Length: 313
Image 1 (spheres, rainbow, N blue to C red):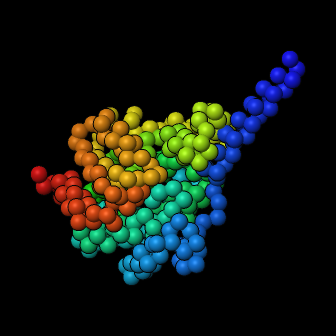
Image 2 (cartoon, rainbow, N blue to C red):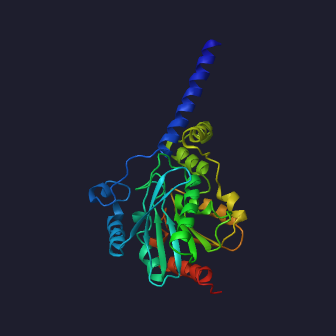
Image 3 (cartoon, rainbow, N blue to C red):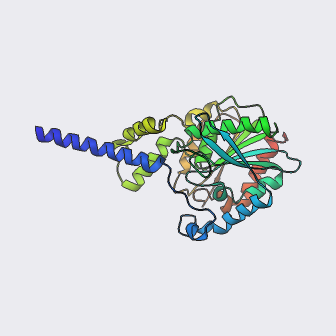
């Protein structure tokens, strides 16, 4: 009997450790890649995108991107770049993805949006780049940060029409705002390959990497997230925000996404309030829809912008 108790305690401790380790790996800030160092990029998962990254950085330099800073609701200094357009039609706020950067995620679209007539507001998500933070919260606190950037934009950069856009975690960050009472000049959301909730995406990666049922430890990971980082893994979910969406939503996803399954976007779209649009790209892996079908991508995005930024019906 005593041996059985010891075994049970040992199993519980192991589950708690795995849960803590999952939280630590998923959420704690670590050293980032030097996005302008060719050797570091070539040694990373972004090795095929060095030229695009350098091109995006060159774009920011050539357009004299202004550095901005705000304080978050919980006291972090958050950083962004601002690239105004001549005679702008509006502003697009672009939220990059998990452990990534604007130089990677938006290298292909910065010039496109700017040439169309959009100001670019490019925040470093908390815990990324020059923004402070110890814990990534998978869009939970990041969505509040984006609200702060909207307020900053309207108070300091003008009240032109605003489109919220993001890729991967950045897409979820923006979709978590869909049911909020946003300023009237926020005209829509463009979300590319977002996940439904922190719990859903961490569970999926856990199962794929460890080949174990995530139910074994996700409760411990959630507890660690609440104790150390101040958020719960189920605090936000696109399937609960999108049914009450107050702005038009364009959802994009690569059908062959191997990281965030396309089904997560389908689930969000299925429950999303109108007006809504869905664009699925055959053959596109995670975040690569623009590279796979840039022509159709730009056509659909331009139609969305013309309809909701310019008011063309």
